[in-house]
Structure formats: C-alpha cells, structure tokens
Length: 99
Image 1 (cartoon, rainbow, N blue to C red):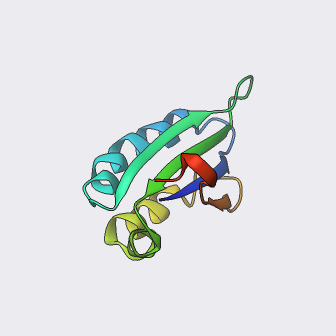
Image 2: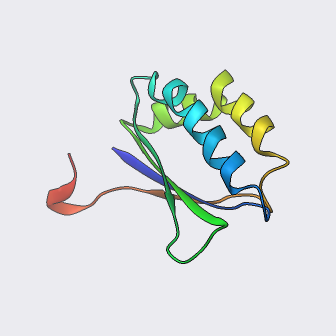
Image 3: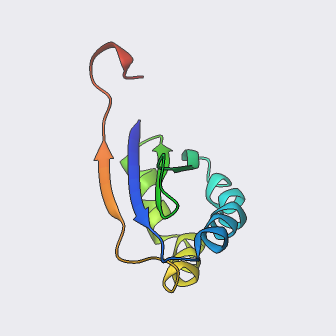
C-alpha cells in the first residue's frame, strides 16, 4: 500500500469550484481498482487550504493514476483554481500497520 497527500491552496473565491471539481473527478479516480482512497479534506480554520488523501495498492497503481486520462483532465480543470503546484508526499506504512 502507498499513501499520498496532496496539499493544495486554492485561489480566493474558488473554494466552491475546487470542491465541485474534486467531487466530479472522484468517481473516475476510484474507478481504477488500484486507487482505494481519494478523499478531500479542508484544513481547519482555512477557506483555501486542502489536502487530498489518496491510497494505492502499489507503486504501479500510483504510476498508472498519474498517467490516466482522468488525472490529466483533472489537472486541466484545476490549473486556474489553484494558487500554485500541490505539495505531494508519498508515504508507506511501516511496522504492524502495513498490509
């Protein structure tokens, strides 16, 4: 299992558009059986800072996700909504919590 966090800051006044874009893209992202989680969270006490929590069964699934038509289209939709590039962290569970 591989987890990814994508921290995103949206432009002022674009939060509703961003949330709608993520909601619209979510079914396509989760249609890939290698993607087991793709959830949006808003940072507490912020109207513009978000984190996408993602989970993939393995590295191949993560690579496939990044090259998928859905991901490319999602990036095009977001380009005018976000204030800068997302900050990505790729994480691997350790110890007893790993599957």
